[in-house]
View 1 (cartoon, rainbow, N blue to C red):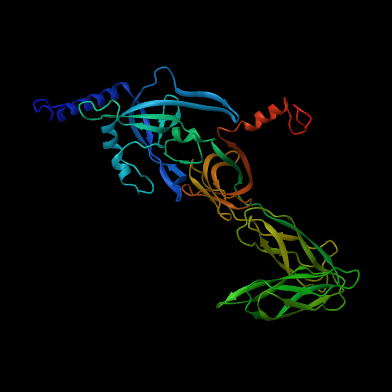
View 2 (cartoon, rainbow, N blue to C red):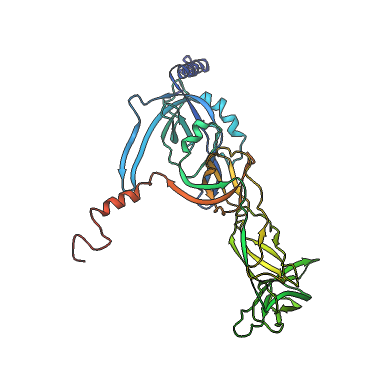
Length: 460
């Protein structure tokens, strides 16, 4: 039999009255929390595991705190990894306020970022201002109280203290973002406001290969060919060289051959052979000088930092006759340092002390101020990380959530601030998480029972 038609069993007007009373009570007796929805960045497609997520939105919302005598949950407990804090809070929010104020914004996001928009979702965060703490929504109760006048009016959020796992937290509210300032994998980058100049010294000798002349540049090379120079007579040092290739109109050939070591003790010009690299036709000859000193090798004593392109190399003129000026070119490593100097012309007429080598200055950087939580990228390594702290006095940039490894000598660029500095030293600082005390506990336990040497409970 149908319900009695003379009783409304809850009219829309009564339901509206209860909702408005609840909204008013929350505004009077509630606290103002910040609701931070989780956005998925990447998921594992087979088992739908969340690999990375971010929190970059925030919504102020009034909530009633059900806890009246402290946090609920297991509290602070000792585990085999250290102290684990498992505080929980229960918050009541208005269903209408969430659906009218937050849901329309979440509905505009891509389905891959936000899967549920019409209600609070497990995994979202709530900033609890009274304790300056972030809580993660673990369960959403939507049927309590149970259908008063045929409708539900509130959501009850069961929240647990948030355990950081390298998520991106960028709400643009410093009070919230800085809660995780020292959490996660932290790397300290010692930056310098400008590159430092590399230095090098030259050694001289006689009976050396002055220069290699390229008679035929060959063609069809797919890799750098090998350059072999016949050995020096007994008591001398062998010369060595490297080929530099270039590509024009889709054809790769040899551009020049530079000396790594000009050798000593040669009495006749050695033979140069070019092999490998997939090409053919290249040929070269060289000339030697036996009666005056020329540059045998150039050794880099300080690679400097901050180089992005090969700088010029200046060599002082020889004072003796016949005066033949020497020339060389620098090699820049992936780390932004000078890894070597190759000789194009060993010159002639130098003193036994050798010439002065001057390597051009590194790139000028050191501008701007890094912003908290912005993404910074290494110019050479491609590594990226989020800014945790930037100390302008010490030029130490503390970053977290690092992908890749920053190279000493490369330029670090801020994505939003545009700040640019050169990395001098990159050092992993610490990993801060709930298991951070496991090493201390293990060391303390070894002082009591040490299983590394023998079994204290038996003979085996």
